[in-house]
Image 1 (cartoon, rainbow, N blue to C red):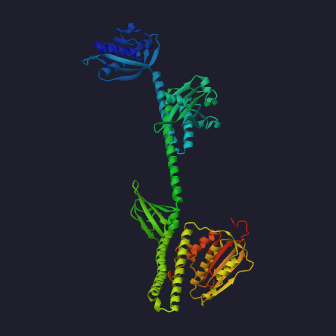
Image 2: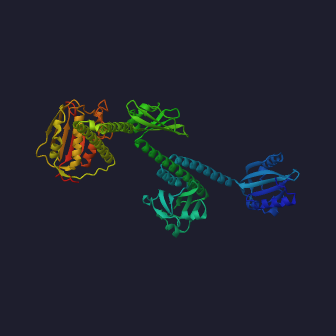
Image 3: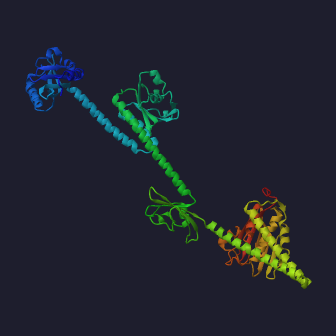
Length: 623
């Protein structure tokens, strides 16, 4: 309602009416014109001084009944908007849209009517614009959905650039990334392929100008010299560049260029470009997050699959959902056998460790951790069988060493005490026998200490040998010369050719090595039998074997017997004595000379120990 009776409000009302862009005509209850604004003068052609105080001159006679019906409707409390026709001063008819309402005084009494006129064609243009805007907004929605559906970053960028022409009518487009103080073109549409990955200085670019001005959109036109300096000048006829800033996480990430060479750009196109640039930042962020998630999952999968530890993931119900290759190898259960069911072994509480032995004999250390966010359990387990065996071997070593030390010490102490207490009452022969026993036991203690020292040095990699050519045949004959008289149960045969070539190595170390092999042959042949030492040339090496007909070595122990503190498993581990260092020292001494020693079964029973050393005159013999 507009009140023309109050001086103050009337002044404001007249100012509003005078400045209104649409034609406004006010009439009193007798249909006399009381207001006729400048827009009405322009629309109808009558100046205000010719209309105010007179009946409104614009209603055709044939439409007077329609006019009166509209006023009656408004008088009874309504507001009417209709399309109709009105006269111009020159007699022509105008196709108009008329909105009519009541004009009331301060106390609410009807004092007249006010009508607002505007051309019907303006409505149609506005409707067309609104329809096109709605169509483009719907298209923008489809484009954004299409962009967001693509998760590969290069494809996202290409789709963004291609969407420009569709939405803004641009002749070409591109997307640039901000990389430090440089720009790089990563996607283009309707531009030469050679432009991809072109770079430019951020500071002197339009993006730099946009950032300095603190805006999100920029329109650059007119200065052809300026446009010709840019990489976009490869688009013939370029006259306008519209630029929209893309941000990710609130920070500028890149920019979207719409290039116009033939078409024109308007406010609607700029608005759509700004919206598309905003969505581009979101889509790029989504694609980058997806790619990072894919990379992270690939990294986790590579770690999961390549881990030497067995790894399993259980869901909140305790069912296996992941089972890595190491888990299959350690347990013997393939993933298809366990996924969907419980793990095939007992689990500790989350955060604790449990040591278990599988039916296969493998020992596992099992750890569990809970993923609080998902309720899942991650199970990590590793094979500790070797460590378990070494631990047992060390326990046995300590027990064995104490036994091996106690026995000769007890004997030495006993005979030394006897000599001390009964020297005068003993015969010379008894005294000599006691001293001989003390000497033998002392020699055993010395040999035991030597083995412990050699084993310690070998384990620390501190064996120092003098490598040179020496006569293995002579060393073998010397080592075996007195063997036949050591036992009535054993026979000793030596078959070493006279022309056996010199070998490369340390003669003293090889003598210790050979003595240990011969000692083992006697020790592990308690019932006697043949002990045979043989040597021959095999390629660039000399092979020496020591055969016995003793208890043999189980297949599973043929490598383990060369470890520290391990003895051949004969069913009675203390039957033959020793601390389990002999063959460990043998292999360490052999390898320190560039040779190798191995254990093999004999078809008729017993063991063959095989030593291979390089011939001294081979090119690599002394390296």
